[in-house]
Image (cartoon, rainbow, N blue to C red):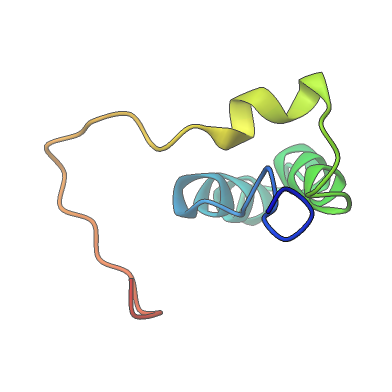
Length: 67
């Protein structure tokens, strides 16, 4: 199971954070996300903040990928 399931996945709020940063001229969030996603099966301390779901919010969130 551990070899088949990644420890980190690209969560919507992290992808949007990266896109918002890139649209504002800040590529650091995008570079960090890509670095984390290079090795999704490897346990590293850097992935902790990328494993958590988005914090609760009253804002409605709509995705377009079937989720």
